Length: 185
Image: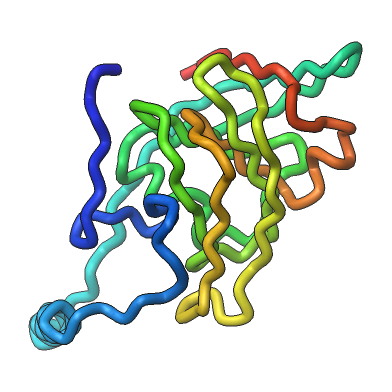
C-alpha cells in the first residue's frame, strides 16, 4: 500500500489519533460554532444524520507463541472510515473475535474508547506481524462525553488488534508472538 495516511484535527478519526496528543482538548470556538450550526440545520430540516454504512472485510488471525496457537475471527478495518468506527456502540464481542486495524505505514497512533461499550485489550503489531505490546483499555465512565484516556504504544506499529479485555492473558499470549492474517472476504 503506497498511500500515506495523514491526520489533521479536521479529518482525525474518532477512535485513534497520532501519539503525543493528549486527553480531551476542547474544539476551537469556531469549530464548535460550525458544528452547532450544522446540527441546527439538520434539526430544522427535520432529519437526523444517518450513520455512514461501514463495511469490514473478514478474516482469520492465527496467533502463534511457542507451541500455543490461537485463532480469531476478525473484522478488518482497513479504510479511514472503518478504523474510525471500530467497535463503537457494540455491547458485546464473541470471545474468539476481534477487530484488526490496518494502517498504510508504520506509526504511533493512540486509541481511545469514545462510544465504546466493551472493555478491550489491544495488541500492537509490527509490519513483520510480530506482537509488540498489549494494553488494556477500559470503558470510559461516560462513553459519550469522556474524558477519554489515550492508549498509545511505546513504539511504531503497522497493525492493531482489539479483543475482549484479558483475551491475550487468558490465552497465554505475550509480546513476541507471531501473527498471520488470512482474508476470507
